Image 1: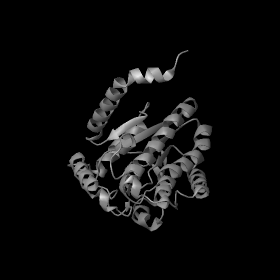
Image 2: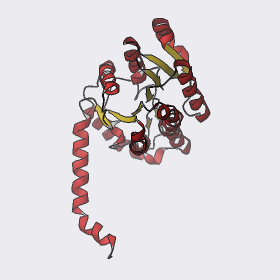
Image 3: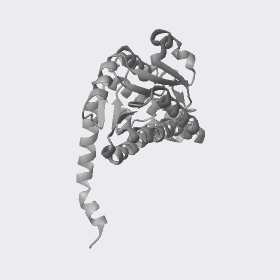
Image 4: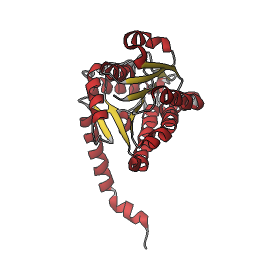
Length: 274
């Protein structure tokens, strides 16, 4: 039996993974800004679920929630940083408040929960941190640039984290989903005030997104996948969820390598002489 701590458990992947864990007999501390969204799960699974009200933007509240979960269940085995949202808008269109809010939730929220959990996991000599990124965490697309930036930041500190804590028995996995039938682009999303000059770019970006996500993935299908990850003896640092990300990543990285190689002569000159 594993003990889970999941942020953003009211909907989307967080909810599906909470159900997956609970159905097989695990225990889950599930956080949400509105815990009433977890009432049906509490009715169904009883004391196996610990609902916690949490806004991950609040660092002190993050530490308190993680501590409460660990004391309640006696330990933590899986920590899932799932809370986040998509911010739409061209880079020029974003307000300071919108840009900062995106990072507060997608980056700092995950960072604070991670920091809160690490002393517990290191003391145990075990534990698995799952960071929910995106294909947009290794690639970037017009009209969601600040979202891309937040997920790239999450990926960066998580890759470094894996190197820092591997010796202590703590594992880190970055999950990079493609397009799924969640409300990421719907009610949960936020949009900047549009500038008319960008309308052609916006239309093209929307068309490209529809092309990338012709058939959205089924969030329920990720239940078995996430259980396989947390049960793996040697889980990956990075893993795609969905059938589209590998194609996007392959084209993107092939393009990057080709461009770096094409400019390698200039790069070497920029090094200077010994």
